[in-house]
Image (cartoon, rainbow, N blue to C red):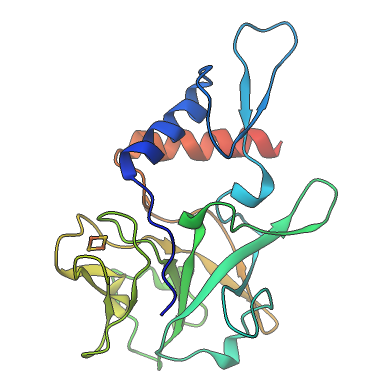
Length: 220
Ligand code: FES
């Protein structure tokens, strides 16, 4: 199973706060733009580090098909990892894997298996669903549970149920995996909005809301 680099939640949280409030601290991975005539510099997220955005297409995150669109018909009750792929301001395609916390999982369940608290309106035909793949405990990439149904984190055995909105069903994670709203675009999967709930590494709702606002401002 592919393991993705774990990020220290406190370091990542501080990075976010620096981005959100525009402090002068040096921030790895985020480009700095000095705005003429203002005392405070403005931090700009590069396109590959933007979170999944409305209009992004999901592409495979590994294997022979890495970078190719995830097709709805190829999905099953086994997870498929994906990255969001969008466009930069020049219209060039960008896979948003510059932030490992953008890693996603996609499932397709038989009709009727996906139930609340899954947001059914944010799935494709009540069968295809996407979530953050980053464990809310300490940021590891969550995989399928080989011992049964559901998902299991390899780091501290956190368990989630993807048929029930990825709620926590075991272990130390403090909250469910965030659901990403999606729709069909032919055989492709397109993102329709931000994550529906606060994803890792955010700890406070106010930080997540401020981050979304910062992203929206940078897109205008
Ligand atoms: S990082 Fe997943 S259970 Fe600890």
